[in-house]
Image (cartoon, rainbow, N blue to C red; front, side, top):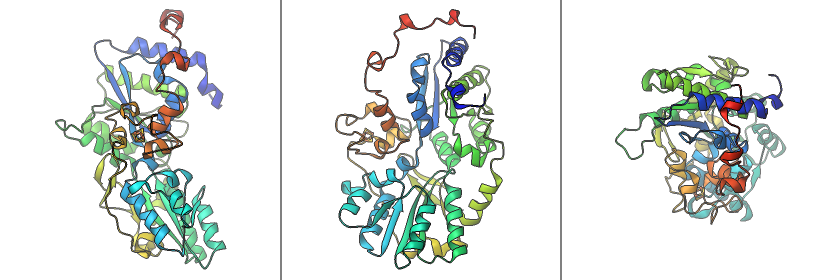
Length: 393
Ligand code: SF4
């Protein structure tokens, strides 16, 4: 298959669905976490959960960079923008809407006079720095391994051009560390979320490679299938996971072979290794402090580190009372378990990060009407579903 349409083919989807139904055992459940928020949105956009047997449960993971940033880090950005009139603070659009302590946000800071700009990339921030030599331009960098290489290249570019008024507030985080934290939770802890395997991230894996997840199988006996973002990718990956479970295997398999290799993108890894170093520890919303789970600027690039340049201090804080984002991000609750969901908290009035971001689970549930009954969403009744026997799977 070469083109996107082929990965959305209804007939193939039905065959994969039947194959999954034929494979699953009725005497057990299957709980698979899609780590990445992109997968969460993909499965609901294409109605994948409605195609699955009832004993396959998709657990939504923390793979949304806007969602997992703790309130205290957002507060740091708000303080920087409001207390330093010389600063132009720029970040991605979603980040500007996330509520921080006391309901403050970067958008609200802008309304009060702070110079906060929405950018599409670090290149836009560099352009602002070139155009405003008398101002301090700070790029509020967030993201997993996918967006880290562009930030690193931006910092290298700033050094090459001698841009003295450019710096980065670095909040890049690391996927394997978060997966390890999920698997490492004490089985007796109430924070433990039992899963049978992971649908592995797509874009992150293009950069870091499939070998980065070997520890899931080797140390925890949990299979990982790296999946593309199209509906057939996800269905095929679920079939691969079900087969592993039924055969008692825990392997790292790569369904997204058209983009992901075992070792990943070595050039991207090299530029990241040049510019960044691991932090000892970093707080994730919902997962708490995770050792070695985030990046800071390397000592050799410290002059571009906004935390150092502006003496920014981290003060832990909590989000909106009653917001269940932390539990949603660890997979312990579904968005619809939150009593604020769709009643008070909506994409127009988000009370937590998971309702803001394009990759947030709450936004996915809201956008694709998961708070409505299946019939209201156009899901066929059992009587109109195609029987397994009618399809040659
Ligand atoms: Fe938080 Fe809103 Fe999601 Fe509830 S619905 S968990 S308040 S983002």
